[in-house]
Amino acid sequence: MRNQKIAIVTINQPSLDSAIKLNSFLKDYKVDIFTSKKTPKKPQNIKTFDKLDDILKPAWQTYDIIICILAIGAVIRKIAPLLISKEQDPAIIVIDISLTKIVPLLSGHLGGANDFTQTLTQLLPNSIDFISTATDQTNTIAFDILAKQNNWQIENIQALANISNRLLNKQKVKVYTFKSIFTTLTNQELLEFTTKLDDDQNSVLITPFDIKSQNLILKPYIYLGIGCNKNTPLQDIEEAVKLFLEQNNISFKQIKNIASFEAKKDEVGLLDFANKYDFDIKFYDKTNINSLEYDFSHSASTKFFELKGVAEPSAILLSHYKELIVKKHSYFKSITIAASI
Image 1 (cartoon, rainbow, N blue to C red):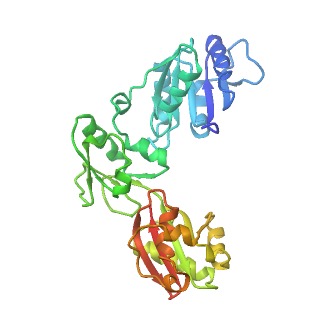
Image 2 (cartoon, one colour):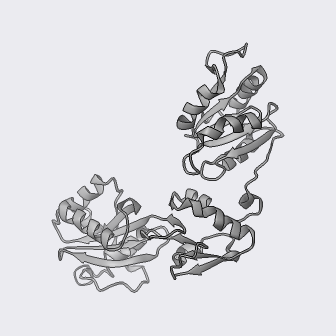
Image 3 (tube, one colour):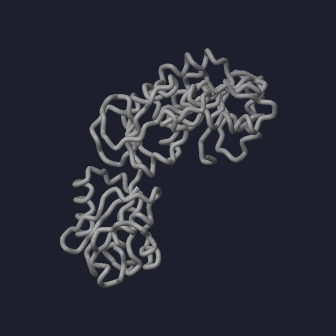
């Protein structure tokens, strides 16, 4: 991603010269170069430090990627006290002075060190990477990468190592999820699709529902379809959505977006709800809705608009995987809500 903030850390003249050369290949990125105050020839735009510790600690909180043109052993010793977690540590990459050997040292997956290392090998002539992550070397599905690619929340990340090791050892891993999600997973040979919740530590749960489990959990977004009577106020819609989420054990933050029938595009309460929570509400027409081949719940919209429904079809049309996961619920005799993934 071009908006990543990058720090290049050097400690002497040869490594600074290499950093300046490297920066010429990173014109599309936000880059700061750091070197020791003792380095003799420093351009004015180079930031300086007395000791490595002075820069690495604040850089840990400020930059997405820290590239070190330093000895690997020195980097390891200096970053060891700064380590927090897989989810929070920045990507740490070590490059030699010749800019030909690149090692993603830390946060290869969630931090993006592996991906950026591959970007660097494409930019730098005659360079090679040394990616040591076993799942990358064996083309094994990495569930943390899957979550990152889809911007899914990860829970119980401490369970990831067991799952990855099972797959690397050619052992089965159960995946509790929806069929529409499972069919998109790569390298399925060792994955077993299941709809039975089993807390056996050898399963991965890919679900938006709040579930108490020690297993690795990936939480995809949901999409809400909302139908309402004319002039339904914001407060009623807001309360109905909260009840719907509570009844189905879903967190509000799992909502990606909302949708409805085009006849509702001027409903002030619905528009106010979308605006309040920053949803880019979508409206679908009769042709869109009636083109769906699903077994929808009975809907009053069939009588009034000759529609197959509002909440359920709108949710499906908006969603990523086109699977209805919660059929419509009715509230206050004026609001219907359904959820898809």
